[in-house]
Amino acid sequence: MGVFNHPEFDHHDSVHYFEDPASGLKAIIAIHSTALGPAAGGCRRWTYASDDLALTDVLRLSRGMTFKNAIAELPFGGGKAVILASEHAPKSTALFEAFGRAVDSLGGRYITAEDVGISVDDMRTVGSETRFVSGLPQRGTGAGGDPSPWTALGVFRGIEAAAAVRLGLDTLEGITVAVQGVGHVGVHLCRHLHEAGARLVVADVNKGNLKRLCEQVPADVVSPRDILFSNADVLAPCALGNVLNSETIPRIRARIVAGAANNQLASVEDGARLTDRGILYAPDYVINAGGVISVAYEYLGNSTEERVRSEVCRIPGRLRQIFADAESSARPTNVVADELARNIVEQGGQSGETNRSTADRRIA
Ligand code: NAD
Image 1: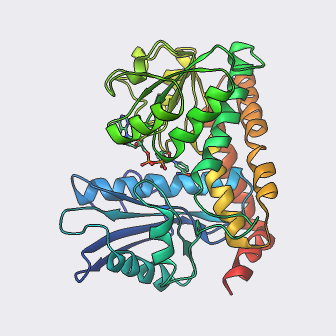
Image 2: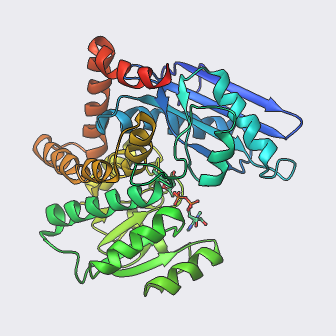
């Protein structure tokens, strides 16, 4: 598949391929937009069935970061990296050092952090080769460290907002939430939901992660095949993307879909499919921005945990605005969010020197 004519290309600024035979590194870094500042977005390590699928994933994730950073009012553009996992390229210090050199070679146009399959320790190794990295161990009360608890907090507060709008509830007490994937974000989300009195239905393909969750909070475990169609008030996809599509949407029973996973909709049209079924969808890159808010404030420096918390707690307000605009204009929530994000990028691109210079100063 070509790059320029790829259906997900969407005017990317640049796409970079890296290979390091010594460590086995194969990686793609996609920079979708630098209109609002250097492109910021995590690095995913995943086993892809083909290089084409890795390219599709990184392009979609990278554009999502442009939209996510714009709506979260961060002085960053959108980019993303994927490391192609294989038995020939196991996780190693050499692999992450090579990835760090790849990031460094872009001179600060792309700033990396954790995503699926990457730990804080991995990022620390990346940081030995480049300063264009965030999500590093926290120092004192400063912002930083694993972004997933912040992502989970934003998703939790977003579920509260969605429940208020769609179910007329001012508490999650007694409602049922089906959580697909109890990894880094899912486990923290489940704890918040449990503390709020919600009942949990969970599934994961990783038995170790399921066991860890069940040791912490009570939850009904169902098979990964059934979780999307659980008898629940809220469905929270917290695993991988493309789970909302023409096959799955007709069978979803929840009235709200609100979770952490990136690219939950397989296509833009799937937003309308959810709306037609009366399901309120919280656009993924709006509700899951807590993590990037944390890594962004860490990267910019001089930020405290309290500042990050207050920024993450603006997520429910943004969602309520999108829900209201979608309702009044009779459009799907994803369409409203995409339009809002594109407008912010366009305006920032024309007059965004202030934004851009904030992050560029940090790079200089
Ligand atoms: P993770 O890898 O720690 O957890 C994902 C979990 O999903 C794992 O336990 C995995 O076994 C499980 N899983 C995979 N396929 C599954 C399936 N078919 N059914 C059920 N479970 C399945 O990743 P994470 O950091 O928790 O991120 C989860 C999602 O949220 C990803 O889509 C990620 O891109 C997105 N996200 C994460 C952050 C963050 O701060 N970590 C921020 C924004 C978005």
